[in-house]
Image (cartoon, rainbow, N blue to C red; front, top):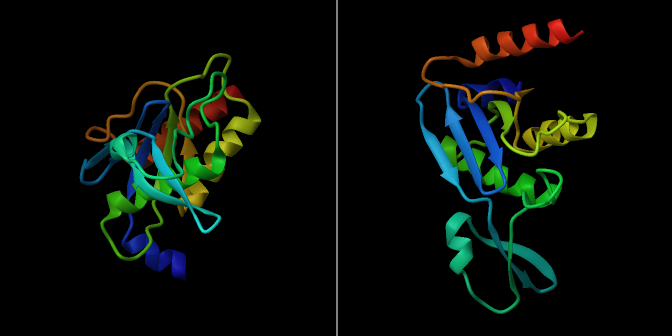
Length: 168
């Protein structure tokens, strides 16, 4: 029941993931949120606290402040799962502009480090990242960029399911 209520205040979006850029695109309103995957993390009373997200993190200064990109790794796209989840959750909340935590339908679209395809582990990482953002439905897309002005979540979902049927 709670998820159904959340869905009334939610949206459908594509999450494009790259080492130096995260982009969220809404299907209905075509709103776009782009930000650098950077976090300024400070240690306060023995706890790590996120102070600033995005490009502002680069210039954030203070004692015991660490600038982290959870998507920077030479072999895989997600280097630090917990921080990547917090970074994406920030973007999902920012795009919703609602006090109610959104439960969006998300299409996770990794743009880099796809040589040889995605492993089952990588697929699970992208699903778990979306679940951590409160997603009520998740699809993972590898391929050309999705045009949220010309397509809907449903049309992309149908295409992804057709592709899966062809592979099986």
